[in-house]
Structure formats: structure tokens, C-alpha cells
Amino acid sequence: MAIPKTRRARYGTSGTCLDRRQPQRRRSRFHSFAVKIPILDLKPATEELRPELNEAFARVMASGHFLLGPELEAFEREYAQSTGASHCVGVANGLEALQLVLMAWGVGPGDEVIVPSNGYIATWLAATHVGATIVPCEPDPLTYNLDPAKLPALITPRTKVILPIHLYGQTVDMDGINAVARPRGIKVLEDGAQSHGARLRDRQSGNLGDAAGISFYPSKNLGALADGGAVLTNDAPLADQIRQLRNYGSKVRYQNEQLGLNSRLSELQAAFLRVKLPYLAAWNARRSGLARHYLKNLSGIDGLTLPAVPAWAEPVWHLFVVRTTRRDALRDFLTARGIGTQIHYPIPPHLSGAYHHLGWKPGDFPLAETLAAEVLSLPIGPHVAPGDVDEVCRAVREFFGRG
Ligand SMILES: *Cc1c(COP(=O)(O)O)cnc(C)c1O
Image (cartoon, rainbow, N blue to C red; front, side, top):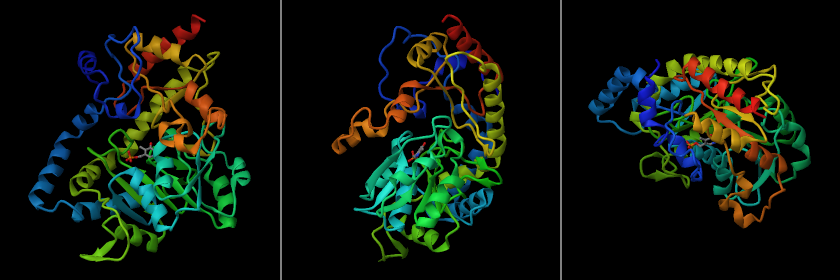
């Protein structure tokens, strides 16, 4: 469903959920240009499903059951089934999904967790919050995903977990990672926050390692109407333990067996997610259609690198990320034409203020730093019109045509 341009212009991108992830953008001379094609607009998705979402809302209100009830149980069953994993445990958000798995595995001080040097900081924070030591691994320069060939040099007797991200919606080379991890008894935890429905040959993201942490943050491919998350695994005792840990370490009320968190997925959000789950495949297909459009219309531009998709990967295009050394100029050019863009992510975790105390410097992870300086996300989503992608492509071509 296309929404009229005038409405888009009025709402712009302000108030969209990605904003909190971006540093304050410097005021450019284009600041006052109206946004015609926002990088992200969640309203049409909710609009398309409004009657069903209202029905779910009314059902939960009437039930008087707001936490750990039938909607959560049903969603956990339905979501696990859709991914092929045997168990799903709903939790409060994606960060805690990852953290809870690390807690359940007993990962803590003195243990090392290998994470991508590029990507979103939440992945790092999960390891940091359990007290583990972060060991960053540089990405494959073509896919921007963790490079299994670089793992052996980073492994020590203290390595407990490899925690790759399926970045931008494309699965990492999980066969390569498992081949390094399995013989050494190292666990693999997938960060599946950006890859709902993505496939690696015949298997789905979330069902490729020992466990996966999933986010239902509103802008994800499967997004709730607030925070939400889940753990997926084929390991029944692990699922059981996460069920305790998300609820104060308790299975039987007031019997607290472990040092748990309060990290529950609410009945209301579970009910909303049950409405949205059946649309995930179709909405992912719309994203793929737009990505094909971009790949065709933007091919052969000197100075512009398009996303690379290995033959075995079937991405779900959470983001469409291009790369150029002229990134900031391209971004300003598109902004002036009313085209919204974002940078995922402008500061690699090792150089963020949060990790200042660890003493990393510019140059420590050069690939992550280059990507942070060169990547740009173009508008994509189930409610972006193909005509809008045409317009973005024309503008990008015009920019590079000018030299
Ligand atoms: C969104 C995201 C998270 C965190 O999810 P929240 O639900 O916001 O806590 C973790 N990792 C990656 C790669 C993400 O994109």
C-alpha cells in the first residue's frame, strides 16, 4: 500500500525508531529539506494490519492476563515452528536474549567471547554484561559478515562462545564458523536480530548454531509495537533454563533457584507478533523484490560497491547497504532530494565511548573502521514503493555521474 507523498513529507523521518541509534547528525545546509522517501516509516505496516492488531489488543485486554500467559505460549510455539528450531522462549528484548543465553551457559569473567568488530553494539554489550572479555573479529570484506578464516588466530583456551551477527539480514558463513567451533567445544550463539526468515541453503537463521538471540524491536523484519525478543534453540534443558532466568530465576512462584532477570515478553506484544508472523514471508519477499531492483539499477557505477550475496545465502534485506568513499557527500546529495538514508553504524563499538575504558585506538580494527566511514543504508522495507526505489537509483546515478 503506497501512502501519498504529501503525508510522507509531513511526517518525515523524525520520531522513527532508528533515531535513537544514531548520533546527533550535524546540521547540514540541507537540514530543512522535506523528506519525500523516508529511510523508515513504520506507520503503513501497522495500518495494513490495523483490524487484526485491534482484535489482538481487545483479546488481551479482555483476558486480564498480561504476562506469561496463553498468547506468549502460542507465539513461542508458532515462532519456533516457523524457524524450524524446537524451542522458543520469549524475552524482553534482543540484548537480553543474547545475555540470557550467555548467563545460562555460565559465561563470565575470564571467559572470552568472539564478536564481529563491525555491527551493532548490543552484541558486544551482551558479552560485557556477563563479565566476559570481548574478542573482536574482523569481517569478510565482501559480505561484511564475520569471517571464519580469521577465527583460528583468535581462539585461546578461554574462548567459550562465538557470537556472529547475520548482519543486514544475510546469514554469516555458519558452516565455516561451526567447523571451527564444534571440534573445539566452543558454543555458537547467533545474533538473529536482523535476519528473521533468512536462509542458509535449507536452514533458517536462528536454527544454525547452538542458540540464537532474536529481537522484535519495532523496525526489525518481524517487529513488535514495543520492545521484544526471544531465544531460539534445539537444546531443551537450555530453553528450560532461559524460562527460569527470564523470570527471576524461578519456575515455581517464590522459589528462586538462580540469579535471574526480569525479562519477559508481554502478552500484548506476543499477541501483536502472532498477527504479524504470518506476514513475515510475504513482507520479506517484498524487500527482496526491492533489493533486486536496487542491484539491477545501481550496477556498474564506478565508486559504488553493492551488497554481495554468496550463492548459499538467501538474505531478507533488513537493510540495503551500499559502500563508497564519498559516503558523506552522497548522503547530503540524497538528503537534498528528500531521500532519507542512515549509517549502520557510524562508530565501530571499539571506538565508542562505552568501551573507552578498554583502551582501543583507531587502527585496531581497520576493516570495521573503513566500513563505518563508507557504508550507507538506502530506503528499503515492505512498504517502500518500487517507484521510490527508482527515484533513489536515479539520484544515486546522478550523483556519481557528476564525478
Ligand atoms: C536490534 C539489534 C539488537 C538488539 O535488539 P534490542 O531488541 O533492541 O535489544 C542486537 N543485535 C543486533 C545486530 C541488532 O540489530
